[in-house]
Length: 143
Image (cartoon, rainbow, N blue to C red; front, side, top):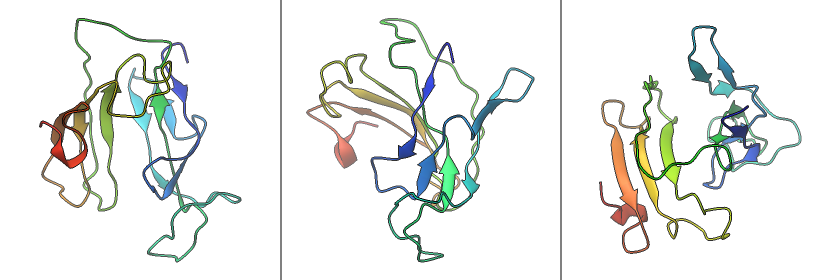
């Protein structure tokens, strides 16, 4: 809690999961942070239609953590050891936004974005890293 806050609710990218308030993020007792996606319906939620169940109630839960206002730097490095699942449909990511993303209320990519790792479940043996800025963003990111 000193380093991040959970973001709750549905995600901004037509995702099928509902982000919980730390229910899916916990330390394992050995100093590791574990974020877990689960097949777990969230009553009262609204997500895009799930291709397996046909339901528009969010059928999955996950974690989304944000360090805004708690952790920022100009120079240095961020280090993580990340284990991802090869499960189709998952898209774990570790990325950074410019520190003024929320202050200026400017959408991505205007504050810059560094995707340290994105792992699309449809490509279990591939990871991606990209830089995004106003001149190159979305599929045109530099990676």
